[in-house]
Image (cartoon, rainbow, N blue to C red):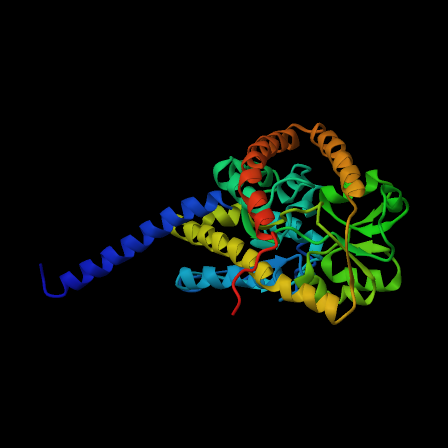
Length: 386
């Protein structure tokens, strides 16, 4: 061995180990989880010395807490973990194309990546809405487990393949709030004629209850509620809802978020762009999404408690629980609506059948684990006092 060869060998071995690590990490994390004219003023980035620069538009307002910052975290992780070989510039909804045209822009190659929620694409591939969140369905832990161990990742890739994209779970809100209302909801009858912004399958249930459903991107919700264009809205939960100032336009804040018990955020990548990456960079992107998926959830958990306290105690919001009668009625409608929608195309039916099977198994264990623990934690005993 020549002088200096030992150092080269060590460096080479270190590179190989890093590559092998990323491949293994990526393999695990991958399972976890518009028009060109409109973008003409944003020239596509060129390759420089072997490095690639991608653009990602979100469907969220730029830097918005939890949602926008999750996309930023994803981009930052990719840049650092790849050693600058792949960097991602983040644009907010509407900066390049309208928010709900982000998928079209990615599929066409105008953008390499997008960040949103699967139910936004139900008009293109109906099965996508079942991946986002299902009323009275899986909670966040169950949803992530379904993706990783229940065949969910493979089904999501099949759905997003129809859209010309690669799918990654890239954040989760956990159980959302039930929404903001200008009147009390005491029975299903109170939904009749109600103009409410509520997307996805939850919106279909509200339609079945007699509501007039409007689908708006996040940035358009506050003015619509303030102007009276809508009577009610759901958004996410206390952390985001406080940031949007929704308490200024509606008095009643309902829980629980029956419509979205765990809302998955998606990072979708043009298949052409995805397939252009070598295996190491694919592993970096997969691992970055696994990190972002947990990061976003933790950000919501860490901030929702204080935000709810602020809404109630500083802004005088009236916090109310949906009556059991209402929840029971909505649950029955959800079963009918979801089943009917899934029966309309084979891919939706395939996705829903997988989730229904997983949900049935999860409910059995939840009774003796999370549910039992939450009940025990609320018992009237004195806990730690500092």
